[in-house]
Amino acid sequence: MYLTDRSASAQADSEQGRRRGPGHRVAPVVLVLGSVSLITDISSEMVTAVLPLYLVTTLGFTPLVFGTLDGVYNGVSALVQLTGGHLADRVRNHKLMAGLGYGLSALCKPLLLLVSSVGALGTVLALDRTGKGLRTAPRDAMISLSTPSDKQGRAFGVHRAMDTTGAMLGPLAAFFILRAATDGYDAVFGVSACVAVLGVLVLVLFVPGRGRVARPDEAGAEAATGSEAGSAAGSAGRPPVRVREALALLKLPRLRALTICAALLGLTTVSDAFVYLLLQRRAGIGDEWFPLLPLGTAAVFLLLAVPLGALADRVGRRTVFLAGHVSLLTGYALLLWAPSTPALPFLVLALHGLFYAATDGVLPAALADIVPEQLRASGLAIVGTGQALARFCCSLAFGAAWTVWGDGPALAGSAVGLLCCAAVAGMVLRPGGETR
Image 1 (tube, rainbow, N blue to C red):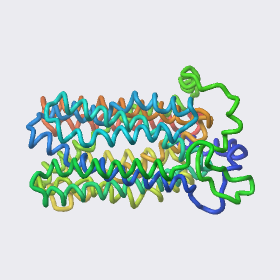
Image 2: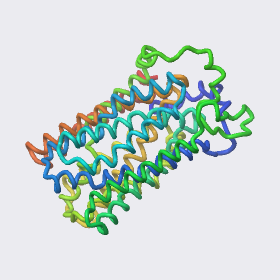
Image 3: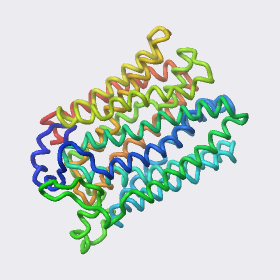
Image 4: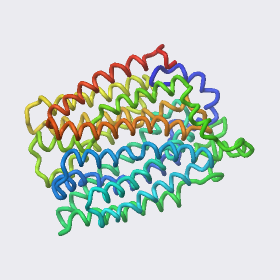
């Protein structure tokens, strides 16, 4: 596991050698899936950019109610990830499960035009995140299975960079729609629904399905274009993957340690929406500029995702992963104690983007040397579920703490917790530690 050291890659080289393509080419399926994620993220981030302000300012929800809904929005996908990952491995069709997830999320976008109560909004957001939970593990499994072990960080970095391009364009689109349309929020939700449908169409038409993609041969003459054909012949007579086999992955010490550390750090990772609300209050940013705040995070993420992914492949994923959390902790410190200067929003957003560039793709890349191919989506889902459940709890706790004690004490508590959890993760994932 690169989060611990790089020794495991040597053991996997002989098994992964058949997938090595020429030079530094990224598998075409990674680029196509990146395009799907780019389009889908435009849709999702249009909603995400305006949702905090819409709920708190327009609908008048308290921070506690908003924290609950934000927890639903970011955490309901946790348990669903297990279902999506297991079903993708069981039916051996990652594209099918990913398509169902993207389709469900697309169906939910127009429903935001029709609801305004807490219960109805919570239901729609839960369904939208159910779609995200279904698609995340199968999509990442397709990326992982089409990429050599020692290039996983770069491949996920390329995908996350394309995904983040959509995360940049989404808030921009929301900003201009709010300024141009009379019923700004309704217009944002309507356009978001149309863009989401386009993402589903690209997935259906251009991502290779089961039995249609080819692995590179041992000479590396052809780059990988998909994740499933290479194992189709060998898996034809294999019985379907059972739930017990997927859960048995937790018996792997390195996977178990990685899951625990991701969950611990997730417990103290404040939701993006709260970070933007805190920054708006701290820096005195006007409501009309609020939708552009995610753009700063996305821009830094886009610039650094590929370089940091490649760096993690070379120097070790543990180092880059923990450094990302240090940058997040620095951002918390600036929000708590730095003077309110024009530079504050740029510094906080740069550190926020650095955090995601150093962690979001590095975490799934670390699984390449741990989880067998036939259970790859399940392994990704287990780690993702632990992290998502932890962030769900963090949103609830942070919203409650903000309501009772105020935003400053709530953020200070999260900062102290993040410092402690990062120290624990650094010890558990240290080279030569128990995760070896």
